[in-house]
Image (tube, rainbow, N blue to C red; front, side):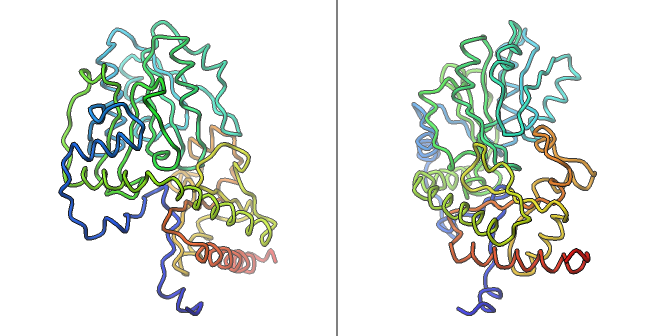
Length: 360
């Protein structure tokens, strides 16, 4: 195919952390699997002991909400919650509401390398600590946290419940919740190329009595199960990581002004945040979109308010780096040919913007 044909016919989707592209295997398919089969597939992907420990919800955000409120129900006499400042918006909103209702919320800092201070975490735990919330992976930066290790610390130094929002990590990092000290874990269908509008919770069996059932689409739940089954092939993750690393290698070689943020941190294998400090990420994205390349800034909604997102703020990323950042989030449906095309067009976009700004 000629380059013009490639440009005209292809959309290169590199914004999977925002919304995972629907799996090709699900397009036009009918879903007649029972809910039990869907639970079994999700339980297998999470490494749970039993499919009974899987509860469906209508979204990842609802999974977070149901989990937090259920733990409050389980230990209503306690009023202290520990979390990180990089939790998902849905979690931060709930915590903000709870703080107005008399709950004491403690935030454990995240370093510029994306590390959590375990000693500070220990010191934050109290007799009245109800719940510790630690996100497994941050969509904006790609940073991952060692939730199994953190859960063990929480259980060894307190009687608190432990919950992790694993929506972004699902299908990219292997889980074995049966061997971990995680009380509950939330996930979302569209983050692993399933449909929007479906989520799930893993809940340790002895805690299920505190968790209420919520409405959800059985058809979407069945499709979520199929997406989970497809995600069991972790060889695809290695392929994605290889493409991500090649993307970064090529950009570093051809665009020396580029900065690859969080490169030395533990991060998702599909995510790369590239920064052009003297430029505007929104303008770069706009240029790329003309070539059919779909990507995003890491924190577009916060940049409109002229401030870094909570994740970038927590990690002390300079505002000049934030505003000049572009996030590429790959999937198993991307190809090496697409990656090389993106590098080429990114170079052209940067050159055009330099000409416009008079910095060439």
